Length: 79
Length: 263
Image (cartoon, rainbow over all chains, first blue to last red; front, side):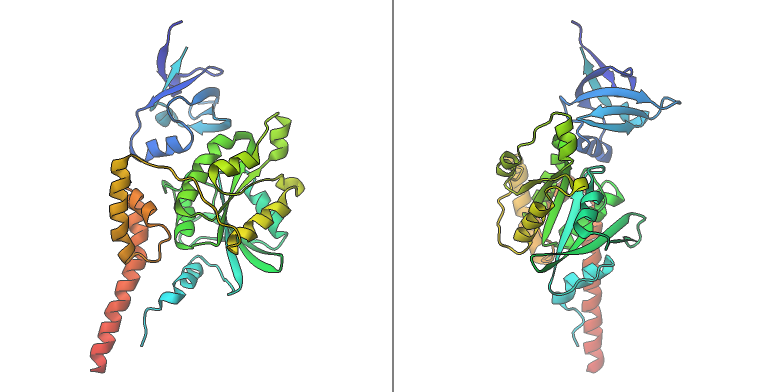
């Protein structure tokens, strides 16, 4: 089984994976951590808005919408 | 002529937040993540007596209301829903400042039983500031429907603060919640919150900084917490810290001027 790392923004709807790392820094990083996006957290892409941005994700049991700009800074390991 | 009155500091703070407190009233803050049924808990506890208002200078809605339990009057302040108290947004700053500077007699953190884990981040952060915490595990009916079992007694033991399961929508568990709030606010029950321990270097630096902070910030409830935020490079806390200091300095200058005039 091959493991790949993709930014959360590129996770297709219905696909899931675990947070490998956050590349965000400063307040955005703090905010993402507060949302429950720590290394190892399971995340699933749920749906996208018509323009594709923002997109909704299941993060630890809550559906949260993230902008692509922010979701780009979350690296997901899929297998 | 006394220009600075330390004893009325807390009342001045409440006034700045648009709160009118009575001397025999206990002040209880209601915090929690967004969408945990916080407002439902608020309405269930206060009945129809609440009214909404704005925090000064912010467009964040706040509600307050009163209720009586065991012949004690309690003022309940509904804080904005936040994931964190680390002040990355106006809502978080309002919640943080109220908990830190308002020194409420108790803080109820409303959590969602269906995704408890993600709510515990805020619980731990509030416990870092104040030991007077009651965790309200709300939406128990929803959790049951999703076959999620919550062991409130075990959670209370682990966290070191009372954890009360409720279904606020149906009024279930509210009496227990009121009892827990009153026991804590009136000082009948002492908690022993489990605190996050950081790396030894951080702990050492925080302890050193905390003793220095203590000298000129007596009104802050928790100096270790302020020290940790400063170490983290949180600039918003510096602003919050400087506001009352500036007022105080203004007072000192006025006092000196008055004294000079008298001479």
